[in-house]
Image 1 (tube, rainbow, N blue to C red):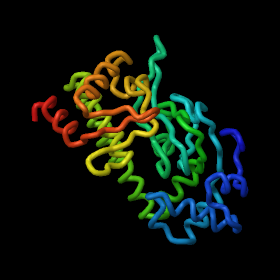
Image 2 (image 1 turned 90 degrees about the vertical axis):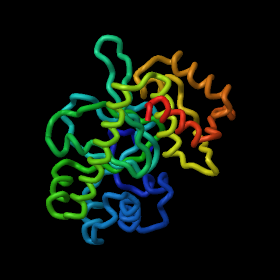
Image 3 (image 1 turned 120 degrees about the vertical axis):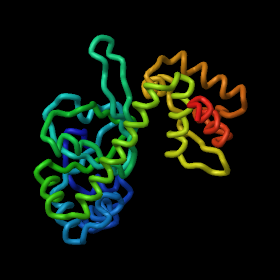
Image 4 (image 1 turned 90 degrees about the horizontal axis):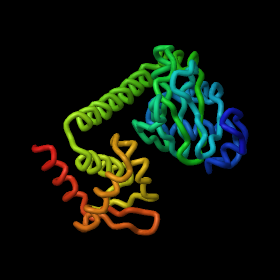
Length: 256
């Protein structure tokens, strides 16, 4: 495998993504077709895009982009997860904005306005990434309205998510913020029969960073939810046993 700073488009990368059977260009295009922002691009545009991308591997724990650095590449996560966060200047306390997974993108804000990175991005798991230089990203935005509209929809979703978090930080106590974050993670994990399996379970420290509190406070909320039969630990996982009840509890905390 390559380090994150090394790039290439070889068969080894595609094998790592589980998408290699022979023809290089076909499999690059196959990867891109899986991303929502590329789904409506014509075949010729996808071939053009595939030829301009670089392909990188970022091991778990690697910093892929740093807050305030001048880089402007756009990243597309083929597989794995990354964390988007900032560290406080005095204590180095992490403030976690989002966790992004396969088929999501990041780095588009710096590519659009040309300003330094607004956050740090770290690999939470081993990641395979497709990387698009700013000049090619802007060329595709200008040339293909379908791609431009898909990027706008992506940015609109980001604004809505951040608006929800600002509201929660401003109006809700720690307990309710933990409820809301667990429901967000459950939505990503997928609901089945009113339950969701968080696998692996988020670390208490990560949950604390997500809701701007400390580990001990999160631990107390998790313990109370276990006592009420809403959560159950299953080895390294957590199962939410009653999503509807957890949602009603959040509504009650909001006073709605």
